[in-house]
Image: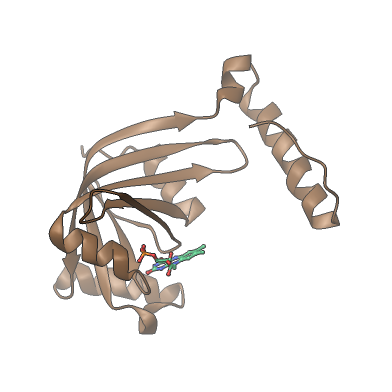
Length: 158
Ligand SMILES: Cc1cc2nc3c(=O)[nH]c(=O)nc-3n(C[C@H](O)[C@H](O)[C@H](O)COP(=O)(O)O)c2cc1C
């Protein structure tokens, strides 16, 4: 069994949005969203480099990476820390490109970044510290996003 649990894989596959942190040459952080986040295998995640010049430049100098994937409705997710490799060929690379093709982005892709996940931890909203259930939190945030859709400025907690 790898480091990625079934629930981690489910959240990554469902959310299709990760925030990816790398380290700049001057040691400042760099954080940017990646909608192509995907499960590579039981120990690896991947995303497509479409338009991420700073992330790629950073990884060429320092392979350290941290990724957050959070379900905005239930205010829960995972944080993954590890090292990244920039890939352009190989059988698994071709398979991953085929899955990106199915998502309609393959002709824009420059590289596939593969992350060996060394630490994987859950992350939850402090709303759970108040004793709220997942169903209650989901209901609050569904209400919030419904209000946004209606153009209302109603808000809720964290
Ligand atoms: C919702 C969303 C999803 C994105 N997904 C990707 C992606 O999967 N791959 C990519 O290269 N850029 C993606 N981008 C664009 C980059 O995040 C953006 O070009 C960013 O400025 C790159 O910064 P960086 O060079 O520091 O990584 C996405 C942007 C948004 C808002």
